[in-house]
Amino acid sequence: MNAKTDGLHIKSFEPDLLEWIDFVCECRNGSTEYQQYDVIYGKVADDRIFRVVDMYRTGIWDKERALKEIKVYPTYDQACFVTQKAIDQLLLFQSSLEVQL
Image (cartoon, rainbow, N blue to C red; front, side, top):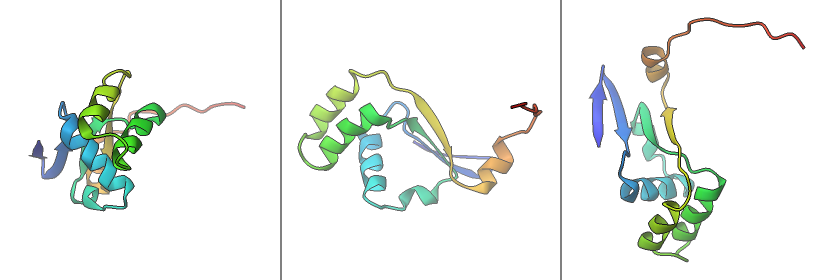
């Protein structure tokens, strides 16, 4: 799903893992497609999930097998703020704390 929110171009993969896995593989292969979005929302490809994605990306597993394996692991969502425009519009500084070492 693509959406424009407050002039922002947002890409959301929820709950579509089919498109997500191909997007992650393309990015890992050097694609700059992500640069056309201000915000990207989807699953985190942490170390465990990336091992599965890499098995698909290198052709060892087909997409069906990879998606089946991904569902075994707990997954977490992330929002990637690609542009400064997205950061300026969506993030609001509220306060800070000084940390003593």
